[in-house]
Amino acid sequence: MSKVIDILNSNRQFASFELVPPLKGSDAEKLAKSIEPLMEFAPPFINVTCHRDEIAYHENPDGTFTKTTFAKRPSTIAIVAGIMQRFKVNIVPHVICGGATKSKLESDLFDFNFLGIDNVVALRGDALPGYRRFIPETEGFAHANELVELIANMNHGQYLDPDVKDGVHTDFCIGVGAYPEKHYEAANMGTDIQHLKDKVDAGADYILTQMFFDNTKFYDFVDKCRAAGITVPIVPGLKPISTIKQIDSLPQAFHLDIPEELVKAFRDTKDKDAAYQVGVEWCIAQSKDLLAHDVPAIHYYTMGRAKNIQQIVRTVF
Image (cartoon, rainbow, N blue to C red; front, side, top):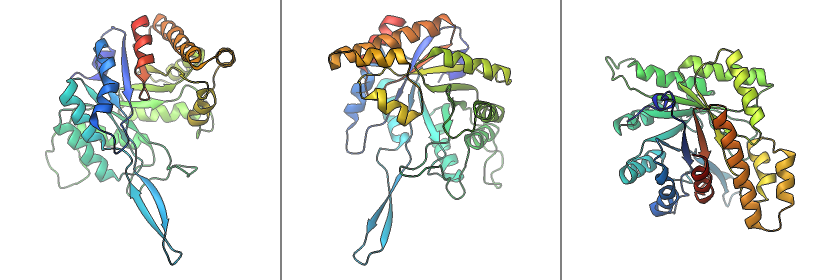
C-alpha cells in the first residue's frame, strides 16, 4: 500500500476523507453507503476513526454500584478489514491511547501490520464522557508522543517484551493530530505547538489538523509550526456545517470559533435547505483558498454525510 507521506510529497493536491464507524447494531451496508459516493474521486486513502470503550455504573438492589465497560461501535480492526475487502482502497486507521494499555496498543498495531496496513494516525483520544480530563489506563500512555514512539520503535523491530529478539520491522507511516485554534487543555498556543513538536520528534511523518472555519487561523498556525522547527507536511481538515444547530454545537464539542460572517449567513437563511447550502458554499471557498496557498491536500470530515462533501469536492478538485 502507498504511504501517506509519499502521496503528500507527490506534488499532486488531492482530497482525503474521514469516516466515523457506525454504532453497534448497525449493519455494514450503512457504512458502505457512506463510502460509495466518495469513491468517484478515487481517494488515495480514507481515514477511519477509533472510539474507546465507555463506562456505565448500574445500581444494585443493595445500593452498591457495578461498573460496566462496553463498546458502542465495532472494532476498528473489523471495520478496516471490511472496507479494504469491499472497496480496495488504502485505509488509515486511528489508534488512540484512551482505554488501552501499552501492550494492547502494540497488539492492535501488529494486527494492522498483518492486514497489510502501513499507515496509522496516532492520537491520545478524548476523556471519557462525563470526565473533565483524560485519565490514562494503568500501564497505558498519557500522551500521544508516547504512542508515536511505540510505533517508531516497532518500525525498528523493538517491542515491549524484552524477550522478543529480531522482531519484525513494521513499516508504519505515522500521522498525528493538531489544533489550529489550540487544544482546549493547552495553556497557550506556544505550549500546544511544543507538544506537537514532541510528536514529530518522536517519529510522526505528517500532521492532520482539526476542523476550522477561518483560513487565516490555519495559515498563522502553520507559520508558528515552521518557526518552531516543525517541517513535516501539515494537512488542513475541513467540515461543512450542514445545519443551523451546528453553529452552537460545533464550538462546544470541538472548542473552535465560527466567523461572525458565517454565523450571520446561517441566521439569515429561511429554511434548512438554504442553511445546508450556506455551509457547502463556505467550505468550497475555504477549499479553493487553501489550494491556492499550496496545501498538499485537504482532509474532509464526513461525519456520516457524503452528499455535501461530494458537492464540494466536485466543485473544487
